[in-house]
Length: 125
Image (cartoon, rainbow, N blue to C red; front, side, top):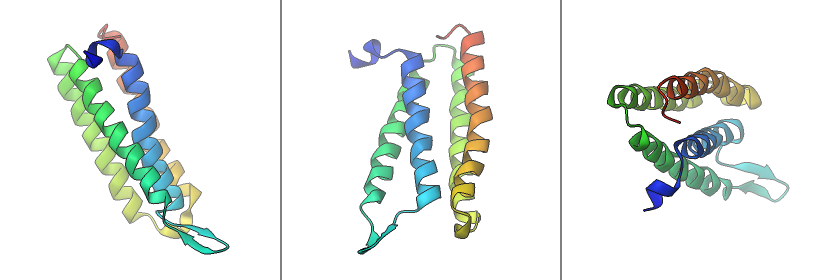
């Protein structure tokens, strides 16, 4: 019954926000933050929880799309963009810092725009 109470638009916004927020945070700050007392490894749990919730909502969003052809395209696009982001996190040098996060957002922004326009054109909202 929970699935019927969450709109596709809401699931999409939260899914992309959390999934790529986790990737952006991890890429930008890494799993450790340097504090005056040494490295703080507690932030990795923030990225892990955000990624788990975001990926669960991505799955929920894709199940809510009634058009099977569009669902396959969007699901495939989600996988490609997330895998590309993970590859970029490990390929780009770590000294870049915030630039690495911006590169991920440059990859992510056109995909989200395409996804929302495709769902809007298909009347899925």
